[in-house]
Image (cartoon, rainbow, N blue to C red; front, side, top):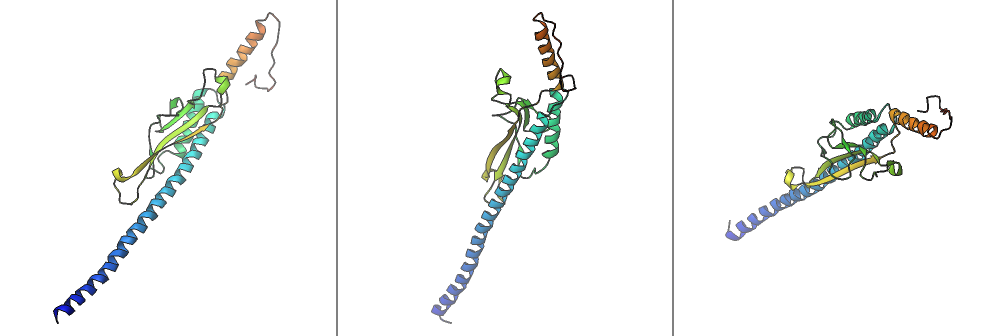
Length: 200
C-alpha cells in the first residue's frame, strides 16, 4: 500500500467519526433546550398553583371569626396545607422584602398576612388592601447538569388582596361606639339590631 492510498484511507476514517461527533453535539443542544423549556413550564405551573394557594389563604383571612388573630391563624393553616413542603425541588421560599403584608406567618417561610403596603392611616378609606403574600425563588438553567452559579434565579412574589370581614370583637366594639354616640346626645334612644345575632 502506497503513501497516497494510506492518506486516502485515513481521511475516510476521520470523516465517518466527524459525523458521529456532530450528531452528539447537536443532540446535546436539542436536549438542553428541551430540558430548559421543561423546567420553565414546570416553574410557571407551580407559580400558578402558588398564586391559587395565596388567594385561598387570603380568602380564609377575609372570612369573619371571633377576632383578627383567629383570622390570621386560619390563613396560615390554609397556606401551610397548600404549599407546606410541596414542590421543593422547583422553588425555594425566601423572606419578603417589598410589597409584603405586615405580619409574617411563623410556620410558612416567605408568607406574610395582614395589611398591605397601600393601607392608609384611615383604614376605612383603603380597607381592601389586606391579604396574603408569598415570596419564592425559581432557578432556570440551560443545561440539566448546570451548577447553581450558572443558573438564572427568578425572584417572584404572589399576592392576593381581599377586604377582610370585621371580626366579632371588632363588630361588638363598633356597635358599642354607635350606641354610645346615640345615647350621648341626651336622647332616650333604644338600638335594635335586625340580624338576630346582636348586630354581629
